Length: 332
Image (cartoon, rainbow, N blue to C red):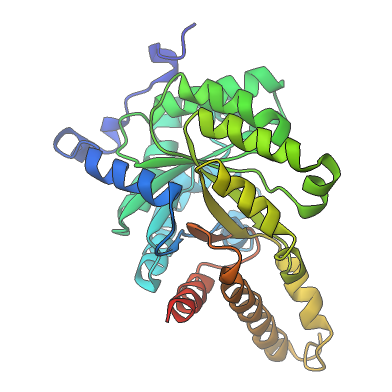
């Protein structure tokens, strides 16, 4: 069955009725493409991953992340709103892990218009300048072969084709799979693509400069506007200078995500006040550690000038304000 056939394209207008008079703004889409590709005069900030926040709530126990779009749409909208008020430019919809195959396996196949529509509606309601939908290759890859996983992501894009998003953020842990995934997506969409690979300095060094440059050239040739980089700790920043240069040389922007809270908490554990007997101190110092990491990231902009910054799993939506503040200071 073709990806464009109705089995992969349920009508989201029943969930987002205002779409009939609010078609996707081509000018905003083009503006996002330019902002993602650079050069970055002003680093944009995207809303972070809310998974850790939801997973810690009692009412979310035993509920799949896809189901949060049905049961917790109001809470999702509130967190997007907090990020927008903090200064985030991009709201990333909670659509990762919502391919047709994954929703079918969760018994949510018939509810897919609501699952996807609610996630996008929650992101749009915040009033951010840009709205992007997330596609999670690693999630569907757990239950499908590589080729089928890429097709499933393309099917998800077809489902949200009329949902008024301005771009797509695609997370792909396996860098070698990224060209094939992007090719599958380009068959069904012309929206701006940001690809988050999580290339570590060690992996890049092990494969050599040619591999990285060739990968960037391949993705750029397929129209990828922005390549994502993960920063697990401050020590990772300087080796990423080579990655940053390779991306720039291929006319792509850089999406830099602070991804690993464990590194922050490990540093906090060394502080005297970070003690299990003093929960208030633990929370306070964990927050201080996050701010310290964000501040170090922003100070690094002398050699890494990302087009977009965002926060990964483990950070709360409230940390977005700290990220925006640090970026503003770095521009001063």
